[in-house]
Image (cartoon, rainbow, N blue to C red; front, side, top):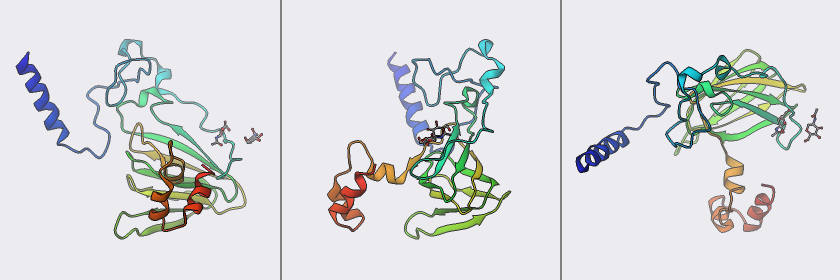
Length: 216
Ligand SMILES: *[C@@H]1O[C@H](CO)[C@@H](O)[C@H](O)[C@H]1NC(C)=O
Ligand SMILES: *[C@@H]1O[C@H](CO)[C@@H](O)[C@H](O)[C@H]1NC(C)=O
């Protein structure tokens, strides 16, 4: 019993010393997510392979334009393991991004994925910012058919430059890329980050911080 525990601890310690930047590789043909399992693992528990159906590998409706009448003028339809159980363990997912005229997909980051974006319709300004200390903005105007890559973890954004609707499709290198929208995380956290901390961090007046916090 004791030695079992020792081996387990050693295994845990050794696996913890590896840092994988992306989702781990699958060890079987598929592991369709069973969202109802109470077991907690890194990923989602597999459904019994004998019970797996074709529909577990299917998501429908990505042809549909989404409603962009909101504060930012964009709408992201994610197809991750939460919407498509068959994605579990495959290290891949996608999204449809609709833009109203002049709409933006606000600065955000995916903690677990690199993103490759294709413009299907419209003209889109894109950019990402490199990490400290350079914080260099890498930016470009994309036309229909252009493909652009946002490196894993870096803050990036998109803006529709056209007078019509724009559409992009994104592929991401994780079944569960995660999204951290900078404005929401910094000014709309639950509970609030103390305003004096943000005032100092943003080198501004505390009332400016309160004003921004009130919008999130
Ligand atoms: C995105 O569009 C769907 C359907 O068009 C709508 O139900 C949803 O509220 C929209 N999301 C946002 C953030 O506007
Ligand atoms: C889009 O969303 C807005 C705001 O929620 C709503 O007023 C409008 O009716 C929606 N449009 C459609 C076509 O559903």
